[in-house]
Length: 142
Image 1 (cartoon, one colour):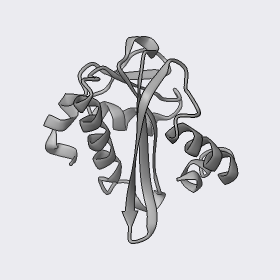
Image 2 (image 1 turned 90 degrees about the vertical axis):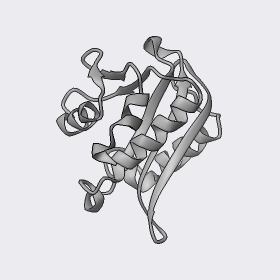
Image 3 (image 1 turned 180 degrees about the vertical axis):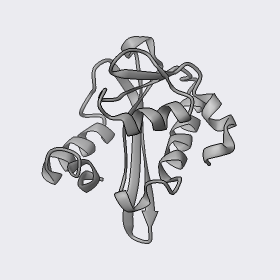
Image 4 (image 1 turned 90 degrees about the horizontal axis):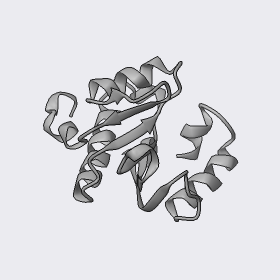
């Protein structure tokens, strides 16, 4: 997982420590709540993608998608869509329906991906699903 994050920014050591602390409940994004969840997509023993999220009180949301990364070789093969659906189901189980995600304004690919999956623009840096359960109903990207 750390290797995938480091491909975008930082070092693998930095992300190993950060991801472990986040999943262990020792690192707390702004207004985050416990519990947290992480899902990993594997091809054999190789991590080809992962996603993580948590409950929150940030921006009036119930949940926040913290990270989602997929190796370049697996992009466009529905790995990210499956990870978003897993997170959506986790949020719905916890009755956290309003879910937000921070997206850099210049990251057009991520913005389009989330919007294809029902997210709407909240402001320049944030997208929101007002009801994340809609992701589970949309089988188009499963």
